Image (cartoon, rainbow, N blue to C red; front, side, top):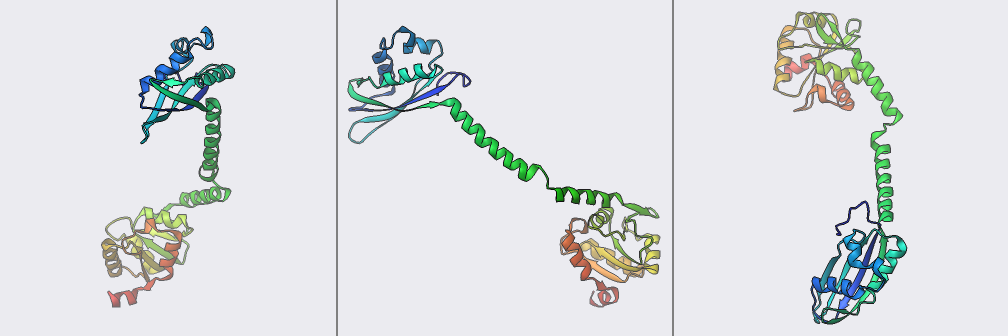
Length: 275
């Protein structure tokens, strides 16, 4: 729009015009300056106001109609006070000719740019606050759950060098998983009698535990998981087999998925018959 610093613009004059013939933008600009010259005195002369930066560059939007007329709108930014801006706006309506054509100009609006900014700021502030309340500030229940989750994860310990939950030594039933991340996911969801194999080979400690406790092997739903099942069944005395859904890993399962898988565990002897 006008070459005025955005911080100095106070008002924006919007005027509609119509001409009986075809005119161009220079004709409109010339009429605005020429036919208002001296009308309001030297202090409100448009050329002087524009030279000193109190009136910005005039922007014109026009179109030609099918009946040979020209209609459009022009915009004049102002850093004058309200009364001076109103006088400038009213002077535009005295213009009777644009180029060689009779014309009529009507002030459509004088907008307070600061008020427009205030409305924008208010609306934007509402949007930001709504987002802050709904997304950024966590609900109390979520904070509590994060604390519980953190506490559960902090209970990660070791059994003969293998990552496990705190109940692994005392529990009658245990769950064997593939890796440390699997242990953490089960701990996060309240399952504490879990231990990880922790590698490609089956540790002696795992083999011994399967002889002492009721044992469930919980593996990923991929070929790697199938290979671990075969290895564990060959070397140990595991009681149940659980496999994650096809293509999923134990470490990424939700609480609902974890417990659903564990409910559907398959006795090791039955697994051997079907695989």
